[in-house]
Image (cartoon, rainbow, N blue to C red; front, side, top):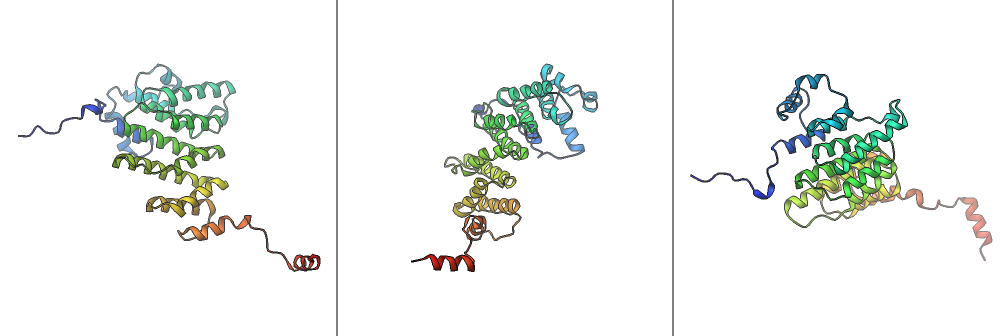
Length: 270
């Protein structure tokens, strides 16, 4: 008899539900009843009554020691000024989200806060999301990837013009040259960022998409760039760089001179 599968000691003793729970914050879990029972069976401290009558979110965020409950509460924090609240509430909620997104030791709490910030119109939300992406994350590699992808998704969701800068940086990052998993992680981030740029019509955003379509060897990246260009422009041009370059740069070319301008130019010429 063999010894069977032995856990890798380098990977620690994380609970098996961590990745699945994190994915649920990205909207990748099954909906409906399956989602309900996933919530129940993956949380040993679940209070069934609390599922149907959730307690005050701020109370959960301040007092609960259950990472999953706090993550859900953070994800549900709506922007007060967009829902009839006060400036004081705005500052208080933003402090909760900032601390959770950047410093919380529970990955689900970071994911919840980052997801909530994607719905905020306050421009400070974009800066917090940028910091969450650029910082050194303390979790297992697979969780770090999920957190960073949620940041990109939230930046896309804000629709704020400043959010495009980090999306451009992520889309233009070089492909990884390490292990298969490292290469796949960078590829997934680039795909997420390229998809997010479909919301931004600024010149630097469309130029990034054109650059990827024109220079990238990876088919998936080129296809995603083409898809985003079609979305942001409303044009159904082929997946080739030349027609897109002509279209995107057409308004920067000087107009052809009309008959009068040509005559005047001919008369004035020596």
